[in-house]
Image 1 (cartoon, rainbow, N blue to C red):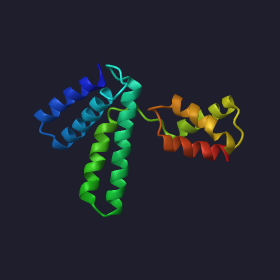
Image 2 (cartoon, one colour; image 1 turned 180 degrees about the horizontal axis):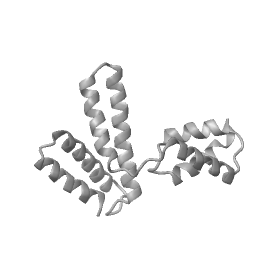
Image 3 (spheres, helix red, strand yellow; image 1 turned 60 degrees about the vertical axis):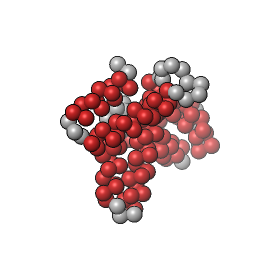
Image 4 (spheres, rainbow, N blue to C red; image 1 turned 90 degrees about the vertical axis):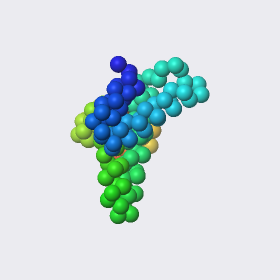
Length: 149
């Protein structure tokens, strides 16, 4: 079942259950997916990888907004963003823990032959491709810096 079909079903359930907060999050996901589907150069169906990228982008936007609202002492808006973030994250694959990322990156660094921070680009390129959707880019970057330092 495609993600858009799953989102459509969940939107219907949220409407019937009168869950306005979940409905708002799901509608934003559907909108972003439809936009990605109709972008110039896009094929008829978007790949699972593209769907994950769209969802990650939405989660990142929610995190950034929540951080801003928290810094500005707006707990009402902060709560809305955090709830939407949680609803969207439910559609993402299970994220790897920092320890799992560290173990994977140690193996990758030895496979690539990286020895110093100068080789970070080689490691990051491969890691971002192989861990797409499984780990946050920021976490990957932090761990690579730590391991190569």
